[in-house]
Amino acid sequence: DGGITQSPKYLFRKEGQNVTLSCEQNLNHDAMYWYRQDPGQGLRLIYYSQIVNDFQKGDIAEGYSVSREKKESFPLTVTSAQKNPTAFYLCASSGTSGRYNEQFFGPGTRLTVL
Amino acid sequence: AQKITQTQPGMFVQEKEAVTLDCTYDTSDPSYGLFWYKQPSSGEMIFLIYQGSYDQQNATEGRYSLNFQKARKSANLVISASQLGDSAMYFCAMREGLKGYQKVTFGTGTKLQVIP
Image (cartoon, rainbow over all chains, first blue to last red; front, side):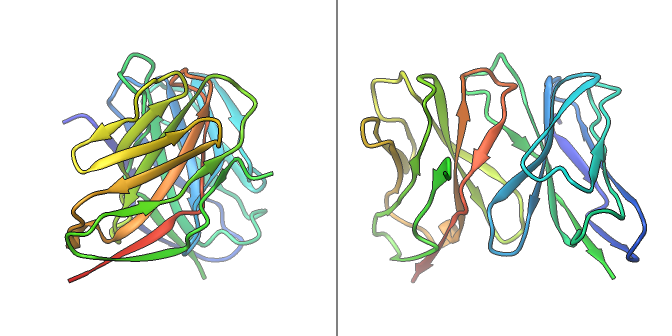
């Protein structure tokens, strides 16, 4: 089945540690996105990538880093510079040849920093 | 300025009744797309409906329809015959430009609760 996988579903880390969230898609989509969602809030864009080996900062990129070495993969690293990293992280992808080119989302990773 | 505004943090609707969730947007780009997503308590994001800026007709998908008023820059979601399973967060979103690789901006969402 085509889709997006994010792992792990729940992640706990100590303050000051970097942590990498995985996102993989087999939809053959060019674009991939990372969003952060805080309780009761909307989705805020962290980084997005329109094509392999290229990515752009979103609205809240500080304290985060990404790479896009393969079309299928777009890992997000939450660094120790991120002041308040506890949140729900959603990865998405979108194509260019569909009817609406809507974003498809993974199940999310809930990160808790202790 | 907010690109997407959802002014209703929470809404209640009686089962089997219709409900309208408001969304206004702000863009100077003549080409854009508007999306509605549903997010149940499990956290997954489910695509519901799409409206392109050049579409002449309001979009409909089953019990979902989009009341698109371009001059007012509003794209309200109408859910007809509400069901208990419709209880969720609903997000309005906009892509400026019509290419699938462009970024999408989300509103803050409306929490809908369907009452039996």
